[in-house]
Image 1 (cartoon, rainbow, N blue to C red):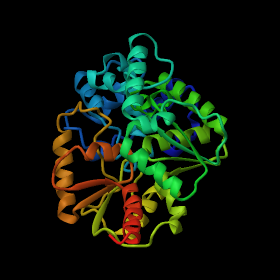
Image 2 (cartoon, rainbow, N blue to C red):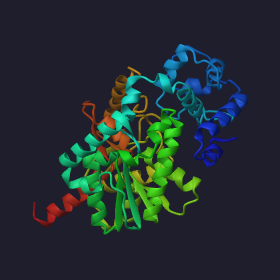
Image 3 (cartoon, rainbow, N blue to C red):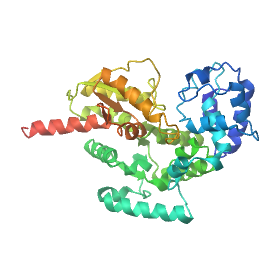
Length: 381
């Protein structure tokens, strides 16, 4: 059973499916250790056999593997190296599911206000958070935590990242510029469920996905676009699971289809593209980003040969080595180019926090800079 087959088999009962899939994977594992060798967070403190045993339903998880599981950021580097095509990332995710009652505070905090139908103190805090954001982000308030009531050809789905003001504003400006007939669906109450899934909260993830499907179906779009790689995966899963006909694109992919509406000018020098865990180097999303960089600047390839890089977001700071890894990665980038462009909003939000002398931008910024440059020339600046 390949990883791709597993993706197609996902349904609204992820808990049951993952139990079956992980059991099959354990039987298929040849214990070659390739997945352990490529893993950024393992320290050789356990064997594949011990990891397999801890993955079994009803089997106790030793402390050293528990620590590893919460340090795992679900980067997926273990998947392509497996000679028998099993998904080690799913197996670790299942361990997180088994230990969901023992999660570190950083995990719990991240999900505290994400998702629909929150009750009790979580629901109260979520409503207060939304109210505050609508006040402080007044120009986006009409899009925050609202479900579109009119059908539209294009649905822009920023998900929880509706609160990432710069990227959302850039996207809206660019869609307006090309004359796109769109509507917006975003907010913590419309979470795609990917953060829950990556923590092993399968039931919550299923609930989020089902409700998101209902909201998307109400819009009946031909195309759904998003700038977040995790949201992209979730919407693509909805398309597969519910046999929907809409197309799923990254925002950059959609803009590239309308590239003729943007100035054809070089506005930047050397730029290196950050290939994220989920928008890997050979993906259509990465290809669109590379084309964008080449149009507006000089594309520089990563100095080390790899399918993707990682922003180390999805272990929520549980591994204390996260910052050191990010700094080391950006030091490599600095030797190749002064600017790092991110094709995934999660990566952008994480990497821009570090001050290392490398400028970290969203690929969308190149489109907006091209418009600013052209408008400045028209005004004689």
